[in-house]
Amino acid sequence: MSAPSKTQNCLVPYVDLQTAPPEVAAAITHLPYRRNIFHLLGHSHGSFPRLMGVYANFFDGNRRILPLLDWQLVVLRISAVLDAEYEWDVNAPVARINGMPEEKFEALKRTAGKGVDALAKETVFTERDRAILQLVDEQLATYNNTEETVEKAKKLLTVEELVEVYVVLGVYVLIARITKGLRIDLDGEIPGLEEHLKKVVTGK
Image (cartoon, rainbow, N blue to C red; front, side):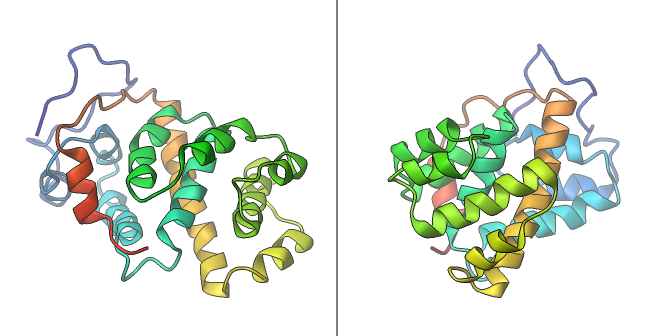
């Protein structure tokens, strides 16, 4: 596992695996490459291993309810709206190798914070995409949703999918907040990342 870059911008030190609680160290060291986010979240000794369990569920197609690209649509929208560069940098490869077209990446950034009219003009978004993005956008703007927005989503998503959208929102907004607030360093190039992601991110 590679060491962090010598020039660190993060406002707090990354967790020291030599002195971290065993459960925290074990949750990090089983990973095949370094992600700074885990070395940051690891400071929350009690919650980190449990949070990793929730995080891992999204990668597992047998546990995740949302289709893979719906999950990534939510994550990338959060990243675009909140300008969370680290979160976008980590998740864009997951979406890309699983078939998200480049024009959708561009549209997610272009329409961030622009409202429902901007979504309607983007032909790359499906009706289901727009329903999910409207849910996410309202939540990020107001921490709430109109009944109309929820009813529109219910016509296109199951109740289980709808609720999981909110779970994904909660987890990845947390990640956006901590990575931005504490000025996390980007991970840089990770050799073999694409092949690894193809193995660990399952389902469609």
